Length: 193
Image (spheres, rainbow, N blue to C red):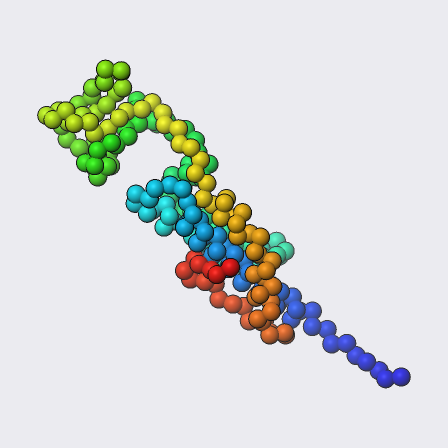
């Protein structure tokens, strides 16, 4: 009877799987970022929100040592969450919210940046800020504004997360058995899932 021996390569297989998970998660997050940037329902005015959609933290082994985790979404754009979930905005330090309606008001950003404004009310009682000289309406004043939900992250996740297992499998298949070279994280927030 011939003697056979088993060569245990558990650590190499674990390293290869971890590297495949990292690449698969990064690829899936990149695809979700691209989907969210290209498939939102709002009208871009400045491009800040669309430009803010990105991978926030590339995939890495989870802190608890179980699996891999990464983070994508929007960082440092104050109004990102209200676009995603909707909600009501009320003034914090003023009686009214000022909603710009003229191009000059939109460029100014705030009534404080415009001169010669006067408070008036329309015949129906709508408060407004108008140019004192021309009477042109620059701002409509509101006690609150309700923003409808315009989800863009959740639909991207719904569209791209089902591809995660296939992305991990593709990464696994392209790595050499016994090798544990960890693929580099994408640098453009993109992916081709």
